[in-house]
Amino acid sequence: MKINLLLLSSFIFPSFFTQNLDVIHPKISTTLIDYFIEKEHYSEALESISIAENQENIPKDSLLFITAQVYMKKRNIDSSIHFFDGINEESDLFFESQFNAFFCEAYIGKHKAAENRILNIFPPSNEEKEAKSILYLFIRLLNLDFKITEDDIKNLNIKSENLKPYKDYLKTYFNEYNEIKTKSPLLGGLLSAIVPGLGKFYAGYKRKALATTITVIPLSILTSEILIKDGIKSPKFIISSSIFLIFHIGNIVGSYYSVPIYKQEKINELNKKVYIDIHHIVRRIY
Image (cartoon, rainbow, N blue to C red):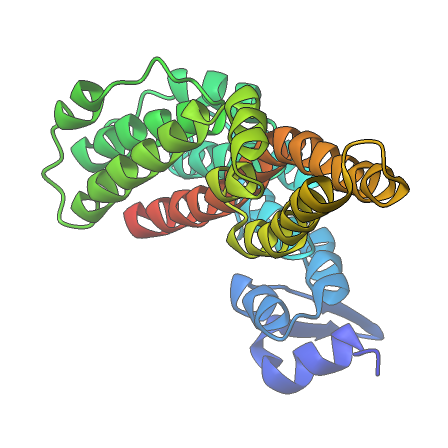
């Protein structure tokens, strides 16, 4: 049911209204806007912000920041970035808006833009500077920048108790990204050529590896028995070996392609963890 903005405002916040003859002049507060956001009435929140823009009691930058937050909750991330970027550099909300915009860009996959943004943020407080140093390495991981070394992580000087855990998380993600990087499709195919299913196991698909093994190996044993009993020219051997070759070649090719597919799946999983941690860092410092 659509909420009547003026009615709800007058009921909850009667002091926001003054009456002059027949004219009612609504006066919006951030408390009312926060109420709508909390209740997920985003249209009403944006309507309230629109009314508040004509008031002098709420700074423009505060309204821009709240608007950006509403669009974040609506999952309209591009609009959110737009409003965060509209906040004046002299505003007390500027650095918070920039860190939030950084998260938004990372979240929607604009990793290069996010990296450029974090490089151009020069926050005043030590905690914000420490957050920047961690977030910079996070975004480089999202960009699959494998030039990062363990020393880059060890050399992070993090004194804030809020941020210390993320240095450990960063090291964990670094190791996982590098483990994914080292997997080779050629090696996956070769391993499956030697032992059916081994390439899929190497890629990371353990169940698929088992399914391949229990399918191809019995076929190879059956084909070998027919060869011994009936000879290489027998119809049984020709049929059996043909079926075996189809499965075995499929196993090799499948293992070759399983490696990059699994790598991308794991990268996507890791990226989601990094997005969550980036969001948590921004929340912790503000």
